[in-house]
Length: 234
Ligand SMILES: [Zn+2]
Ligand SMILES: [Zn+2]
Image (cartoon, rainbow, N blue to C red; front, top):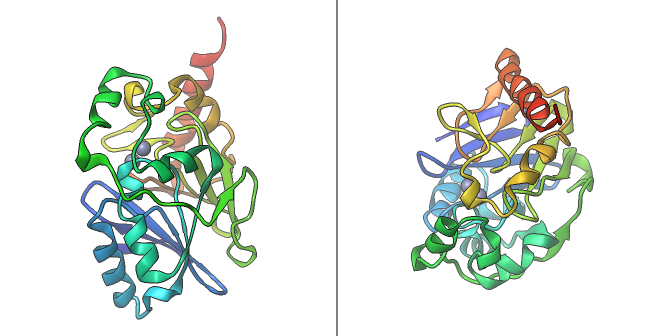
C-alpha cells in the first residue's frame, strides 16, 4: 500500500502500523526508514508497482536505530546497493545490532531490548548525517536533529513541498503523542526538539500513524503550543 503524500514524496505502509517514505530526486529515490525484517519484501514490491528497479533507491536514511526502523536495513542495502545514512549518535546502535541499556530511560524499555526478535544484523553506515545538512541537492531534503526518543533521532524536511517526516519524534496513532517515556532515551528533550521543526508545514508524515495535511496540520501546531506552555515555568 502506497500513496503520494506530496509531489515527489510517497508514503509506503510496510505493516499496518509502520510507514516508510520514498523521496524523488534527480538520481533516483531516497528512502526514509526501512522497517522490520519483512519490510524489504514490501518495499521492493512497491518499487516494481511504481515501474522502478531496486537500484533506483540510491540512499537509505534511517531516522533512528530502533528495530521497527532498521531491522530490514542490511537486507535492503544488499538488494539495492544504496548508501546507508544515519546520525552519528545512533550509529553505534546500528553497528551493535540492538539498543544499548542506556538507550531507554525506563526499565520496560531495557527489558524489551533483550528480546532477540528486537535485534538486527549489525550494520555499519556509509556516512553520518548532521543537523541542517541537505541529503542530496536536487531533492531539497534537509536533516533536522531531533534528539530525545534516541540521541541521534532525525526528522526530515522536504523543503519544496513544506513536508516534514517526523520518524518517532511524534506519533499519530489515535491522537498526537510523544510516545511512552520509558521507551525514549531522554524523554525531556523530545518537546524541545519538536520546536526545531519549521512552522510553515503543509504536510506531516509519521512513521506510526496517519499523515496530517492542509488544515489538519493545525492539530500539530496546537500540540506544539501546548508542549511549549507546559515547559514554561509558571
Ligand atoms: Zn523509535
Ligand atoms: Zn518506530
